[in-house]
Image (cartoon, rainbow, N blue to C red; front, side, top):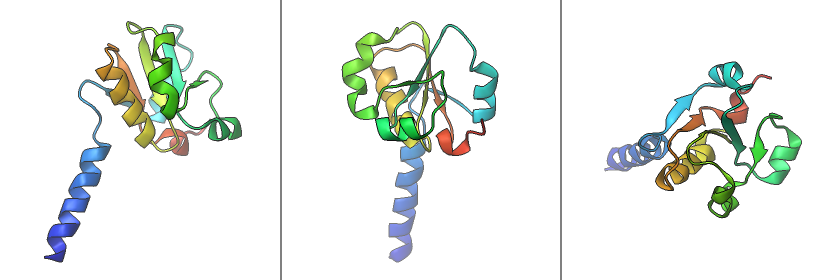
Length: 117
């Protein structure tokens, strides 16, 4: 019986980590190659204190809890690359953006934990 509970928990974790349908995913190494692109909106969805502690200068801080209210400041037809600390909140944010009609949304796998810059 215990192994069934463990299997369900593992399945739930894997399901939650899976990117939303239509959301692209890149590594931090791939992000380094794209960081200077002009037609990309870079969004960091961590809290202001996390962002202040360490961030990538090209990324604008829009915390996940206010993202839905700030979506109007973003262009739906321009790619959005989203990052957080580990990739979980940014995956959530990417799903929200996709559902709101953003055409090209990319999540950074591993987030700032994986960033070497």
